[in-house]
Picture (cartoon, rainbow, N blue to C red):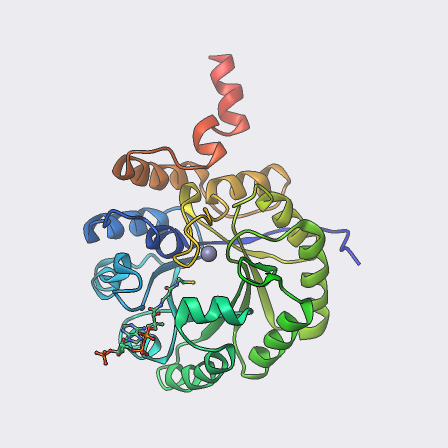
Length: 310
Ligand code: COA
Ligand code: ZN
């Protein structure tokens, strides 16, 4: 059943410095990564996925994870998290000052193999190990269940599969479970059904949504999530984002577009949209191309009105 009341406030997590940076071909200089993360820290977002501890051959862009984490300015009230693919990544991550580790486990065998060269079962075992590694340092662990709606290799993801994985992770005491549409194959009907089921199933475990706008359904899917009572969403400055496994998969929901949608709907985000756009422009300048955010191009409603009154 669809919830009739939308959340009064949503948490928007900027994953641009990880999901967005990781697929850029040109190496983003470490100083620029730091500058952009510092700029995002000033926007009011509660959490930033700052980097990932992955093999530099698999994702060369993330080779400076440690340097980035050691140089960024820690803004009060902002949590800095990192993505890891396995226990080795977690061991490296807990050596740094971080507020949470996020492990990615994909719901399809083929995708998980291609992403982290392990079976889903092996990744689940790694998760148990990572909980131990992280608890020794008091670092909370989150899990992203990748390709939760559809996989380019295996087709639609059975709901039952995601529900079982989510229950397994909740049973390990995982703090937050992110349901990820890694390559943008979800539709709103599916989002409503799966998120409603998971909310009922998991009874209290924190759920969030990671949406890609690959096929233009991103905001319809976010609305479906809001209607199902989900109050935490990943997004990325300017709509940067992609996936190293399937290069045709494009960006996350642009942070400024999601902030705009929520604020226009009367849902509080606590985020200064102008500051988000400033951070996006730093990346546009470096990349030499426009990013897919609509608001970045058109401005907000308020800015449009001000322009026409001037
Ligand atoms: N970070 C850095 N090095 C790592 C590592 C990590 N997270 N995991 C393993 N390694 C190192 C091992 O220490 C080993 O080093 P050695 O040869 O010096 O002994 C080497 O890599 C091989 O280890 P193995 O466990 O066999 O890894 P692999 O070659 O099967 O690669 C991954 C697996 C997961 C490390 C690699 O595929 C990866 O980094 N994938 C990330 C994918 C990603 O980021 N996707 C986007 C997010 S959804
Ligand atoms: Zn993603």
